[in-house]
Length: 142
Image (cartoon, rainbow, N blue to C red; front, side):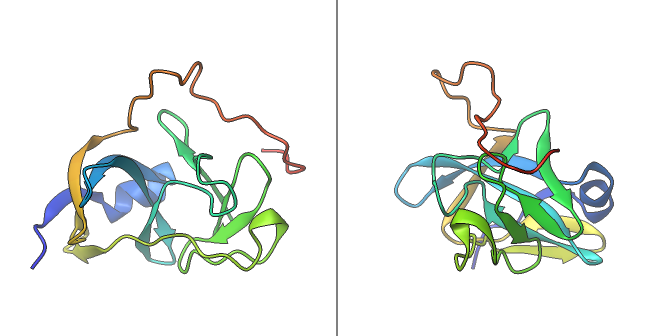
């Protein structure tokens, strides 16, 4: 059984638009997870675009760009359904985000994924991450 770690509240995710946190996987690699609104609840995904895995979907201090039930990749403009992670447009069309197991109890969101260990709220700090902003070739204006 997975260790339960409280992350945030459903209400906060809906108010802020997303919640970003750092994790360590079963191989000792650090990564990020973004929690996004999904109808009345939330869903969680690894924080990278399926088309280009070094491209983050959410940034610390900015969060994820979510509009009309879709999370937008800031680089190419592909949009991912916030409930399923499916993409039906752009360079990531036909791909699905890597989901992360979370559960909601009494309005609180908990990480329950057996393959991930919660590290801290926010992004993994990269030494070569100059300004924290993604480069963009997207046709979508945010």
